[in-house]
Length: 93
Image 1 (tube, rainbow, N blue to C red):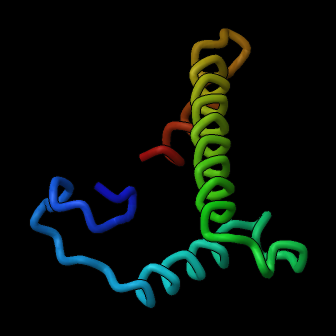
Image 2: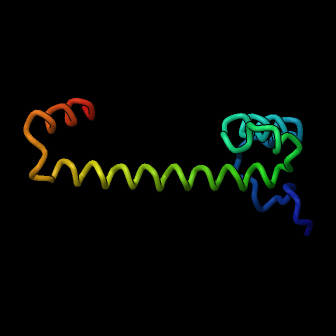
Image 3: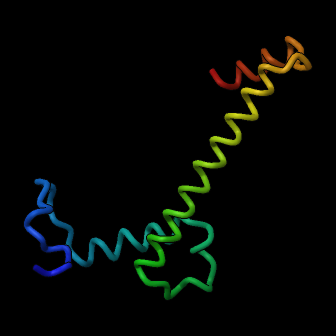
């Protein structure tokens, strides 16, 4: 059995993408990721673009987690006065 995308065991009922569609999607990913938009990755392989995309998403998730922790600490802090807490809560709602 080949290791390509044509394995029948992976058929999930979703329509198959053509090579052109995959190339277009990878190109769109490249435009979304800041590290890939600059000139040094213009000729990056699809695998490199996917790897950088995964790294970018992981970094974003870590950033979200860190910001969530900081926000929780700020809201729990006794130094945060009621006005500050009200402003923060209004921004979150």
